[in-house]
Length: 279
Image (cartoon, rainbow, N blue to C red; front, side):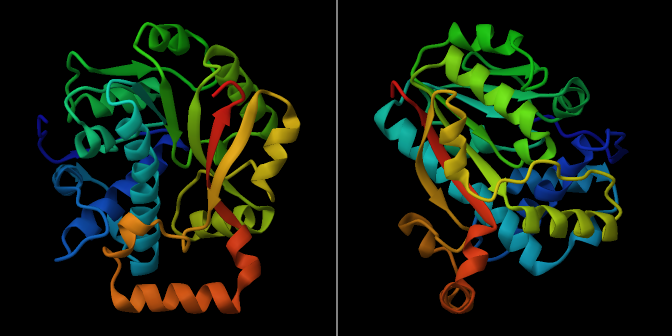
């Protein structure tokens, strides 16, 4: 990782949002027992001139760190079964998932818009097994490049599709399922209530980006008949066993209370794992 001097960043409306989870991972990593350990994020935050403090709320930090860690667990599970398989991180931003999960054998692609890739190259360097691709998930060119890498394939898109319109999400997922019949893909969905609340939060924190796609039930995606089936769906309080020991007692207790008192809220935001029908 090549650290750059402290610098201002100029990103488009949606790309700017990558700085929020970056800051959350950095803040969480400074704790004695972090949910997710990402010292590289801390270094990047220290080198970027941006008003991170407007996102310095503990609940938001916990949610971002836990979300990333939960996606990590799905990728880990894939790599246990397919240690030389290929992982594609869609909308990678300044994430360090490769550094966190590299087993020395996997193949990895980081995909994001050209302006994000330009920023990313200030901190990350490609290698024999890790390639950065500049493009949109809505494009098809990157898929041909990925298919040259050994299968099977696992794609992860953390807080990406919520910024697209439903027809764009459907087109992107159909294209992925068509090009990778045995694919596994993990991504998050937000209900209409969560989308509206998230957009109000963005406005309060002076972010211009707005969520566009509302999905009240991830199972509805199966009805799109694009070649994907829902394997697993979790709320942020449905923490997988390997992560529970990283949560403090107060957090674990609050999650139990939250699940019991507000069952309907368990459905507003979901982390989902889908598989191709041939998988």
